[in-house]
Image (cartoon, rainbow, N blue to C red; front, side, top):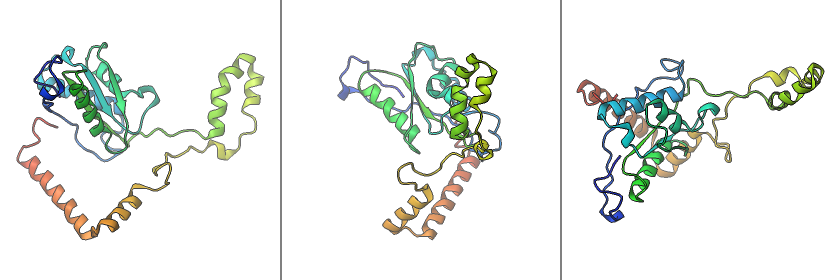
Length: 229
C-alpha cells in the first residue's frame, strides 16, 4: 500500500491504494507445507512481493501481518518475516490477531497509518497454517518444566523430587481448542445459527461453494492468477 501524497499533506488529500499483492498456493494441512512454519510462508510471500514490485525494501515504512495460531519463537511474525525478507531492521513491524479477519485487519491498520501520516508505504499481509499447530504439555508437566531450572541449581535430588507425583495421564498432550473461549462454540455451530437466522438454505450454500470453485478453476485456466501465486 502507498499514497500519492507526502506526509505533509492533509488526510483529506491522501488516497490510499493497494499497489500489488501475491500469495502462496492454498494446500491441505499436513501436505506440502508440513515441513515449514508460518514464518517461512510469510517470509516467502514478502520476498515474492518485493521481487514482483521491484520496490526498494528501504523505502518501506511499516510492516504488518495478521495471524491466529502463533509460535512462541515467532510471536511477532510480521517482524521476523520482514527481517527474513531483507527489510532493514529499523523498519517497525507488528502482528495483529482478530480471528479469521486478522490479515484484513492488518491491511486496514496499514491504511490507517498512511491516512494518519505515520507512513507512506506499508507492507501488509497474513498467514496461517494448520500443518504444525503448537501442542502443549499438560498443566502438571508445564509447571514442573518451568520450575526445573531452579531445582537443577539445588542438585539431582531436587529435580527428582520436583517430578514426583506425576500420573500417566499427565503425559498426555493437550490438544488445541477449536471453539470460542467464552461461548465454547465451534465455527460450524455459529454458521448453523446464522444460516437459520438469515434463512440461508443448505442448497444455496452448496451452490455458492460450487460457483466459487468453478470461478477459481476458470481463473487458473485463463491465467488470471499468473504473477499472483
